[in-house]
Image 1 (cartoon, one colour):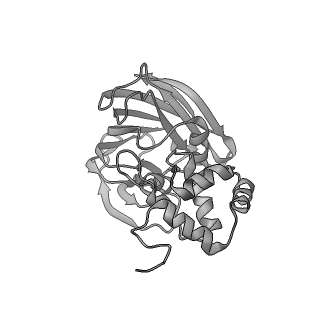
Image 2: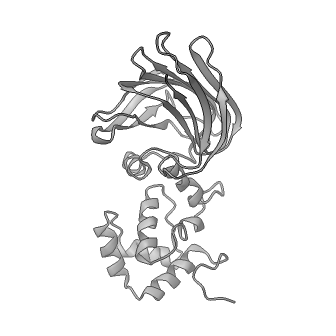
Image 3: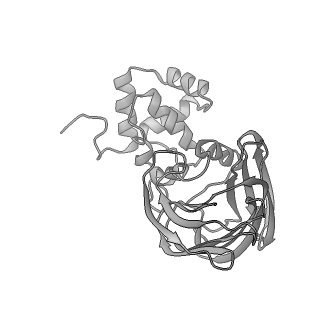
Length: 299
């Protein structure tokens, strides 16, 4: 049997222990490096992970695992892939949302500090987005209506992450329309990023469905792109654009990207979309994880 620390059969503690031995680092030195990277962890916690007494299953532990993999010179995802949640999904699967959410690493850090998770607690059954543009070809608002399903009993909040386009500093604003209210909001104006906690009227039972609606008020900026990031498969995705009668694009097309943060990510499912009565829309059933988008060309 191979002693390679990347053997796919070992468990988390075995792989971690072998990697620590291979690097010749003490737990105290690893702790110091993690602290320097901004993810402090106690020696006791590291020891528990190494012995298998406990595992880093909390969402906020993801960044710690990323830094730990770098310190131990492991391939990205080596440790994360070995952590499984209660529903059997790997943390690598949950961590993949960073590739489809704008400013993924920063958003993940903010959500961790807010005590929110993007996946595993609540999921989307359907999501309907309507983007509005004005006569100056600027996006002004995004209305989102969605049906959510609780994956765990006691869930009472869900996150919204939005980053708008444009060159000027300033974050978008969010307001509740139906079935929820705005909780904590973190804005990063220099990156035009907003991370919001949307709170439901009461805790949900596992499997319970709810309808929510919220509106993101966008600081007007010229736009030729609309995206919807999907972390897990969604039964129904609707993306609609309401153009101003005096500013209708020459053409519109749909596309899918594997990552929103990689400019070289390959595109798929590119197809033209008709514009009728100043409106364009696409409806997708059983939409796969990825970045689903609409883009348009002006005169």
